[in-house]
Image (cartoon, rainbow over all chains, first blue to last red; front, side, top):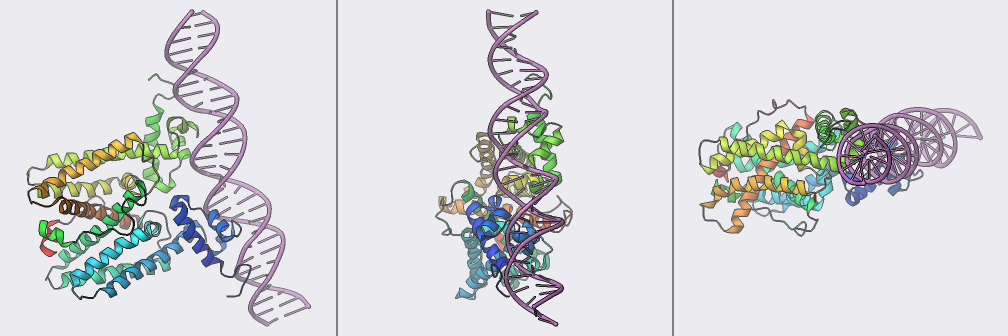
Length: 197
Length: 197
DNA sequence: AACGTATCTTTACACTGTAAAGTTAAAGGA
DNA sequence: TCCTTTAACTTTACAGTGTAAAGATACGTT
């Protein structure tokens, strides 16, 4: 806890990593760039995170936590207790997070190699998942579905949101970041599909 | 067209790239590994593809074409002309392709840097998109929707499929490739949402 | 005060993409 | 046939990367 040369380099490096990530993108991020950004030697990170993958994993934990918090906060801000309205609102929060923190979102939900057996990551990931299921459950609970059908329905719901966010980020990555005036995109009302399918 | 040392190195390299991609994954693929796999010097690819990005871009073109073909083929195999049934079937083909060629799917739909202004890529990408819209359109055509609503509905449909495929690949990448007995996953019937939302 | 240890730096190495120059083979014209 | 030009590679070289190992330094503890 004492102050060495730097004080709390681990967190400083995570912050640097986040900065570099947002500036250069995931594929432009390098361990040495993070170190340089934090003002330390290029081998310093190795001591705090075993490897680049280790650093990215810890950053993913932060991402998961912020993600969960964003959903939770939005959920609590909804005035109604109508499950359907709450779901729609949290789905919108899901999309909003993806647009507000595209790189962190990508870090979590892409194939970038992380330590997927890291306890912190597992815990934060589980919490996020738990948060999600806790929100969809009430929507289908009262409808008297079989376990099977309910799981299918939940999978479809999250597929919509996740796919929507992903496709948005794809467009954004390819045709410029402001093609949709970022973080102001409205997810269509899910009930629209109810009328049509 | 004449035979030099190799004959058609460009295609050989693409094939090698595909092999390496499927074996080592996208983040394990290297230009030098492709060259070595094709039995040529490490700098040979540069002459045919400007860079690694160039090679991946050409491989993405192949991926797009196979993707489009897969959807098209499935579409034509459907016996009914019922738009809704056809849609479900093509959506299943979408998911099947993602599971059968996860690396190619990832190559296309992830943030891996490609030459997104490459004419071949633009064309193949456009054809894929055209194939997709051509299939959803009939589903909503007869329903007398506003232009706006129809676009929203289409976006939601593709979000479902795309998100479903992505989430599947995520699971697969993390918890082993055979956690769902690959390429045998049934996309829930979309009409399920119609009953519930 | 002195030792041990955590924290960082220096050095080193294998690997990467890519540029540049050298080499070889095919092609085309006199 | 010979010569030139050009395409298809190889060789060499260099900057950048992750990471391991050893050296230096300041802190905490006894």
